[in-house]
Length: 137
Image 1 (spheres, one colour):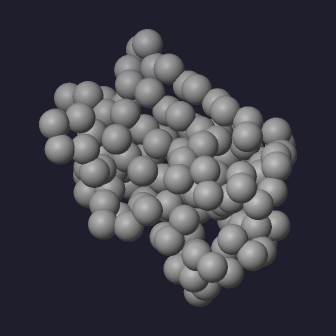
Image 2 (cartoon, rainbow, N blue to C red; image 1 turned 90 degrees about the vertical axis):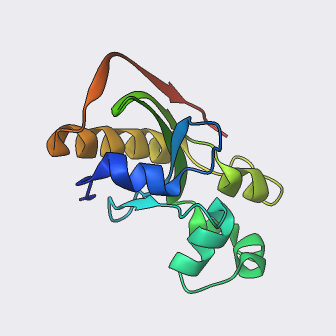
């Protein structure tokens, strides 16, 4: 299953926000359970395609090959995860032009469960008012 060790630090490194807000940019591989951190210098589609040894053109031409990858993000305030958002990212934005719906509800729900399980197993600090938002697209 996914590795959430050093989650806060890895999320900080993936964040592209410049005004102090930390948004960890993630992709959940629902086939392997891996939680992948999207580097701050690349977008979700390019990252996911490269992870599979492909490019974005291939991704756009073969969207069914990528439905197992579900975009997600986490908001972190003062070292505590305050929100988890699963089901939409730049990956889904690009691929929705090719295949609708892009993910099944089962894939999105599995991604949510895998991410939350990973956070809990790793002891990542979670807000008592943690918001979990799920989008099916």
